[in-house]
Image (tube, rainbow, N blue to C red):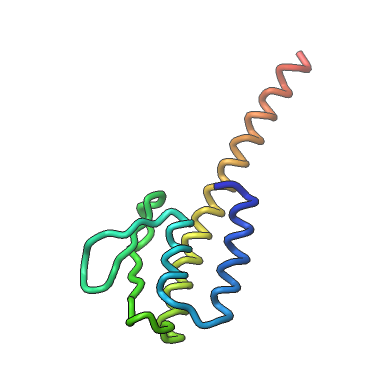
Length: 110
């Protein structure tokens, strides 16, 4: 994941929130943010492969119909948590790179 892809995913998620969605669209998005399907419980569950601290996410199938607005918003809220976790990870990686660059600059002035 890089900053450009993360920004694109944020725009996609905002678009998903603005219109009715079927389970398949939310499942595709879940896969893009690093979730995979697992066999657990009554509804199809998705767990994060990248972040252990994120809860498993249920994305119900209702016969090909659009998800209820509340259900859709709940799923999208959890997917926003995934994006926040990616944002944090990218910020940490960028900070580490900046530290390494600063250390390398000290060696040049000697």
